[in-house]
Amino acid sequence: MPVVVVDVMPKPEILDPQGKAVQGALPRLGFSGVTDVRQGKRFEITVEGEVTDAVLEQVHQMAETLLSNPVIENFTVRVAASDAGTVA
Image (cartoon, rainbow, N blue to C red; front, top):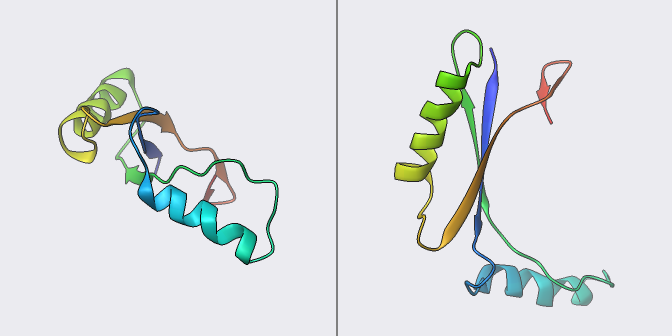
């Protein structure tokens, strides 16, 4: 069955304390060269049948009304690529 992915991220002008905490921890763990970290959410929605424009529009509405807060978050909707049954 096809999977539609919704990625939700804080808008660039919104502070991201979780991302900053991760960014601060990386050097202490020996990782260098990271200049910024933003933390978001990913939703994988399995749909029946084919992914049509109508299905994508419905998922877009889901993202806009339930999965994200449009005031402080941006989201993208895409069809997941499948490699031997795994979601990319």
